[in-house]
Image (cartoon, rainbow over all chains, first blue to last red; front, side):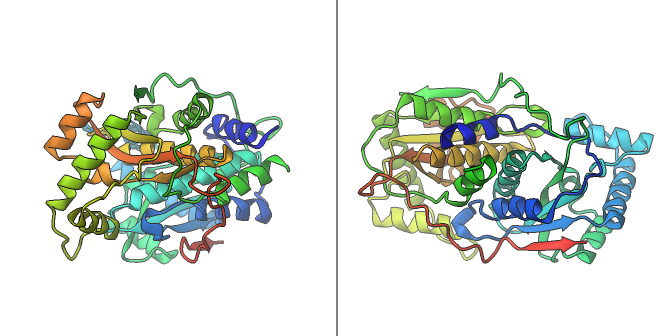
Length: 201
Length: 201
C-alpha cells in the first residue's frame, strides 16, 4: 500500500477498545506509542504535556477505587455530561473500574494556567491512539481523571506518582491487547453522520 | 516499510508549514484530509465538530483583515499568551495575515456548551495534519479565530459562512503545498526536550 493509503486506513480503522486481555505490551511497542505522542504539535512549541505512564497494578487499582468512591458521592444533574453521568451511576452501583484494568493507563497532564493545555494533551492522545492501531494494540480515551481534576484526594494520589503542583490531568488513555480471539481490536469504522463539512468556495 | 514504521514516520516528520505556494490542493487530496479529520474520535461518539472549509479568496481575505483589525485594537498584558501577543503586535504594525494566504483555511467549530469541544476539535485537527503530511501537503494549526471567538464582528462574519449560533471556533488549520523548491514541507523533526514521560511501574 502507498503511504497515504496506509495512514488513511490506520486513522479510519481506529476504534475504542474497552476490554483488554492480560497480555503485556512490550517495552518496544509502548515506547513507540509514547514517542508518537511526544511528537504531537504543541501551542508555540511549548511541549509541556506530561505523560504519567502507569503499569503498576497497585497504583492502577488505587486510582480506579478512588475514582469510584469520588463519583459515587456525586449527583447527576440535568446538565451533567452524559458520559460523566454514566460514571456516577455505575460508581453508585459499585464495581466500577473506568480503566477496565488495561495493562497500561496513561494520564496526560499539562500546566493548569496554560491556555492550550487541553488542545495539546488531545493531540498527544490522538497520536498515541493512531500509533496503537498501527501496532495492533487497542486503546481508548478516558476522561474520568479529568473530571476529578480538582478533587483533593485524587490530587494527593497523583502528586504521589509524579504530577506537579502546577499541573492537572486533561485526558487519559487505556492501552493493551484487545480481549478478542485474535487479540486484535475491532476495526470496523463507525459511520460518521456528524462531523459535518461546510464548503465556503 | 511496515505499517507501523510508515505511520510512525508520518507522525514524527509532521512539521508546521507557514509559507505556501499558490498551487491548488486537488479535490481528491482535500477530501482525504477532511475524511481523516471526520474519523477522529469524539467524546461519547458525539461527532459534533463542524468543519468550515474555506477556499474562497474573498472570504479568506475578509477573515484575515477583520482578525488584523480586531487584534490591533487589543493590548498585550503581562499574562497574554505568547502567540496571541505576537498576533496583537504584528497586527498593530500592519500587514498581518494569520493564514498566510494558504490555499485552504479550515476552521473547526463545535457546540459552545459541550465540555469536550476543544478536545474533539483538536483530534480532528491532529488527524488532518497527519493525513496532510502523508499526502506531501503542508499544514499548520492556527488559533487566531479561537482567540476572537466572542468578538461580535467576527461572529457575524462566521455566521454568514455557515457557523451556527450555538457553535464557536476552537481551532483552525492552514493547508497547501509548501513554498519550497520541491513543494514539500520541511520534515526534519524538532527535538522533543519537553513532553516528559514519568513511568509509574
